[in-house]
Amino acid sequence: MLKWLHLWLGLSAGLVFAAVSLTGTVLAFQSELLLAAHPELARERLPPLALQGHALARVVAGAEDRGIRSIDLPSPRLPAWQAFASEGERHYFDAASGEPLLVRNTGNDAVMWLRDLHTHLLAGEAGEDVLGAFGIVALFMLLSGLYLWWPRLASLASSLRWHARPPPRRWLSWHRSLGVFLLPLLLVVTFTGVAMVYSQPLRSALRWTFGDGPEVVPPLPIERETTSIDWRAVLLTAADAAPRGSELRRISLPKGDDAMVSIRFRAPGEWHPNGRSVVWMDPYRASAVQVHDATAQDAGARISEAMYPLHGGFVGGRAWQWTIAAAGLLPAFLLVTGFLFWRARRRRH
Image (cartoon, rainbow, N blue to C red; front, side, top):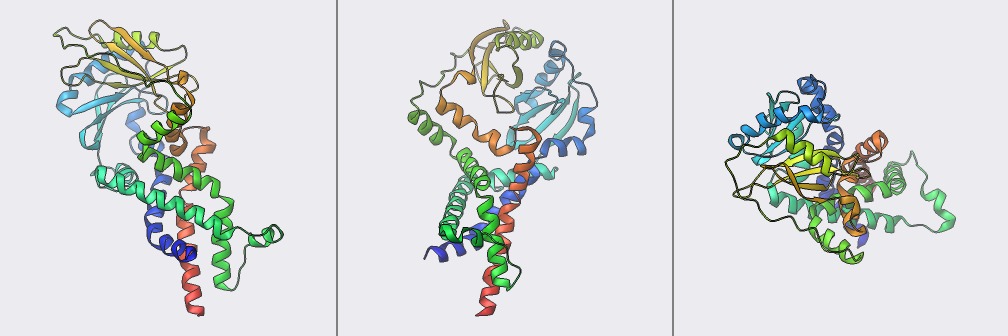
């Protein structure tokens, strides 16, 4: 029964698993692909933080009309302002001047389309829920494959040998051997992907397991004022409020009647490319209201926040980035070899 279930889940749900994983291979290099396709995003040298306030003011001035809700600061990885608008649209602005450079969405950019396929199956929140279910099925396929392969110690070496003929034995040996050798990597990539879909339940479970303290409570809202905002002062004050060596990464603009500005920063030692630390700012007075250093969290929260950087290849430098890219090819290999084994066995019978 388990063999039958493993086979037919692999030949059906395995198609989705392979497609999503292949898109992950491309997305491991999304920043490099973006700069290769649009070199104008890197035409200016990265200006120091003290000079970025003017450009930010220009970006923020048109944010409401463009539906922009948050903005990534320029960085060595992407030396341009990257703003996030509704419907997943992204706007890019010159790092020094704030001049509009580019608008990307799923309709005009292939990488954005692949990202939407990878994260939402092109179907929004409903697609993300379906993707989570497929991820759980994929974990079952990987673990059931391990169970079906598990040999006696005396036959371990022979069970991992690759064969050339006959065809059924060849495809089975290739499928089984590579799957076993690279199973830890596949489990890490698949589990972290599922964990991101179910991030809130997982975070709660991890925090309960490790006995974390209470979650950080954001400060109370600030009323809107007609006073203009000195964005240069806001950035410099936020940088001073963050721990030494931190990098300001993402600005969340005021929402509704609340004028509070939150700025995410990457503290030293954080894996997340944008950091999970936050400084909340009163923008009118350019004063820090509250600071949350993610590196001071307990174990459960830190484990939860490690899922995205592990899955996206953002930790471990180029070696882990290429490892994640290679991992995206494995489900397609397992699907093809599994199908060829099934077909060769049917022809033999």
